[in-house]
Image (cartoon, rainbow, N blue to C red):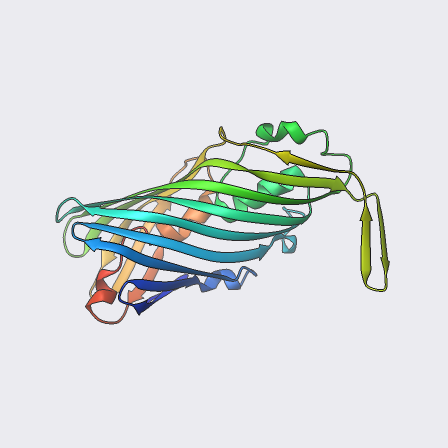
Length: 263
């Protein structure tokens, strides 16, 4: 078991962990994820990950009437190069479904708020003709690809330096858009009338990243990580939980060992 101020994880089987970030519930973002260690043959480990979380961004003033459901799936490979050095590589695909009444700019803001990926609005100029003409009623199905790089340099049993980089490399999907020009609500049935378009928007040139560099103190059951987000073009605020954290590792030997830098 890993009990932290932001993240909690429980080992339900020898190679299966369930994880949640309880702090996100406070801002209306319920979430749950699982990690399955499919390969555990020293010095190499391979973990498969999947999760789900939702957020209603209409509670904030920056992203319009927008709700997002995110299904992250991916893998992480960890290689111990020596007693002092470990490296971690992986890929995550965030399968996103967005719906509500929002503009293109508000969709971009919502992506930055939830995933850290900063998208240049210029790459969406193909749908500028829709924007600015009224309230955009839309739904979007997107896949955001993120590549992970992590490294840990251990100086002794207590002190280590942890590098974490999460780079968004591609965003592609389908946007269905129209304008609410008339609305009627009778007997609980809502009708919306307007034009609509179905578009494919590849965003292969929109690349941003979040990252952190931290010093980690590791005692028998307590971990304290103190560091700073790196200026890599993404939403640096989302790197704070990786840069600064305090948690306790409980349980048997497996609980104390299952504590990689990328978790």
